[in-house]
Length: 112
Image 1 (cartoon, rainbow, N blue to C red):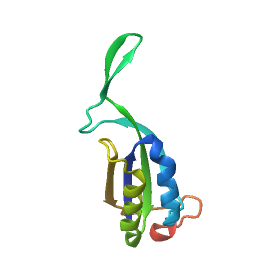
Image 2 (tube, rainbow, N blue to C red):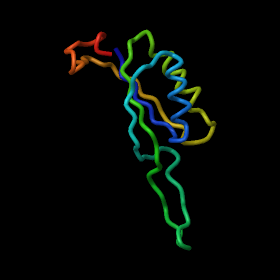
Image 3 (cartoon, rainbow, N blue to C red):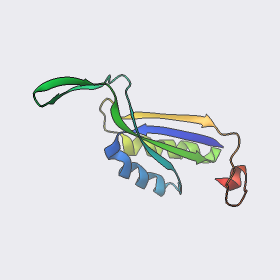
């Protein structure tokens, strides 16, 4: 089992959700987050004053998946989240050691 953590631009969320549904993902957690990478934020003008915005709005997706589905899920995210501009995001894939569905007490593969 793997845990997929993707950070994308907020306006790409609907496209990514649809792409994930097409490859059979039937559950995920979505969080609004802020961050920066190589983009290093940007400068904005507000009421005539210029100020630096260091943390940019992003959306974080968390998906638990079976090993055999990971490459397809990652490819769907990359294709749907791509704009070709800096700040498109990142995908992290971790080993998932143990999962428990609280309602039924199912564990591991059955809990996904």
